[in-house]
Image 1 (tube, rainbow, N blue to C red):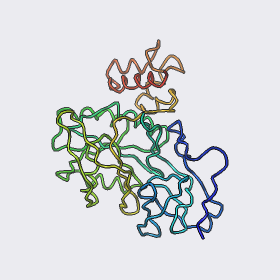
Image 2: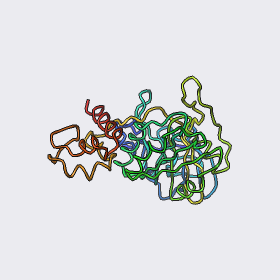
Image 3: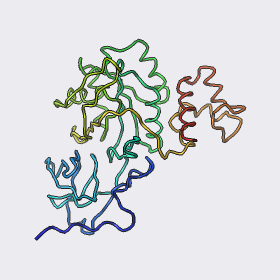
Amino acid sequence: MPRKHPKRPPGKSRRRRPDSLLKATEWGIYEPPNKDSLRVARVLVNFGVESGVLLDGEERRLANRRHIPVVAGDYVYTDGEVVEGVKPRGKVLARYAEEAGVRLVASNLDQVGVVCSASLPPLQEGFLDRYLVYCRIVELPLFIVLNKMDEAREGVLGRVQAYRDAGVDIYTTSALEETGLDALEQRLRRGDTILSGLSGAGKSTLLNALLDLDLPVGEISTATGKGRHTTTAVEAFPLGDHLVIDSPGIKLFGLVGVPPEDVVKGFPEFEPWAEECHFGDCRHLGEDGCAVRAAADEGHIARLRYENYCSLLASLSK
């Protein structure tokens, strides 16, 4: 007798993507009526019609119900053959791209590691600032991995100092020379982690070195200085009691649905100066008596960080 599909939850379709990064945690949640009689598995990778999962300590493949979208890191209900539902999520990483809208990348995270290159592709502070804004808003710890230190460009360590000053942990590594990996591995063992960042920064190469994997890696385009996509799916790998999640490189991290007034949360080094602003609701855009603007002018706050704050606020206020 053919297996009956569970009914859709009442109300709007759960497949409809959220219109804000901050709503992504609720996408696709469905707890079946018989959940207490089902087992719980952890999703490692979603193949579309199937998911690779950890079930009772073993890697398995389960069929996916069409109306139950899942991502790496999800805890799902299963009868041992089919994904029957998705448990409520903890902290998630979501992103926005013009061609796809808001996407949930991974769930039940303890921390995010943004992998950057000390050479090519060049460091992009604006890209880092967007990640930091999102992670501070959702209270998800973020750290930076500055990879390719074996071919580091002059001045790159000074450029990331602004993030140290903002309280962000920085790990310097060379995946090719296998330097700095011990400290990074200890950080990854703190909890379930996703590694994200620009294409070509070396995420897959780092994981190959750390976890003895054989993930495909790409080369940097000599014409553009940008990386080529090699990772095509978000996939989790066990490391001790936790997961390390590899994700495809991205070009843009759009802050869709983020309230403009929350942007300042991604710039914690402003806080001591903001207390001295003349107006309590100062937006730090050059208002009379703005102590943050004055601190940037006097070099107490990194000028580029301040300029990126102003640009982000302007883009979200349109």
